[in-house]
Image 1 (cartoon, helix red, strand yellow):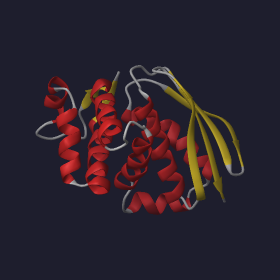
Image 2 (cartoon, one colour):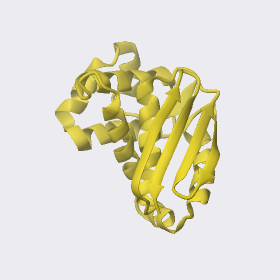
Image 3 (tube, helix red, strand yellow):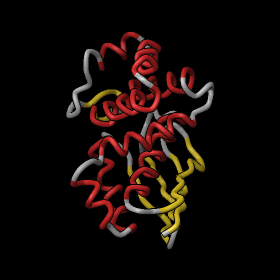
Length: 182
């Protein structure tokens, strides 16, 4: 499985924004050399990278920033969404109905991931349950970052108290539960 460089680039930018350039350098240094070589000296937004690169980034985040917890990947995912959706995209988010946002999130998945199928199995006022299947190589850090990105989208669309939780996960799929106030 591969992931688009744009997602990796905004993840790295989010680390720098939230934790500083020194911590970003430490995260990159922790990534195994053969994977780090693929993203240095820079990440190409339109290139595809093996999912192992993203998994290694999130393992380094867990170890260096999260103190052994994957929660830091969630916060970095929220910030990465803010980085990805700036300017006119943010304006569109504010005018979008939540159902439309979930539909677009399903379609956008293939812009960032070479495989996998997301669907929002249950949607109602202030809640949704997402099921993602058919991926490979995801660790809990990647799933937390996905949940964080979606949470960031909800926040930018005007939802108050938005929270998305990884309810169940494996290397090949996950269930995400979203809650918010309209």
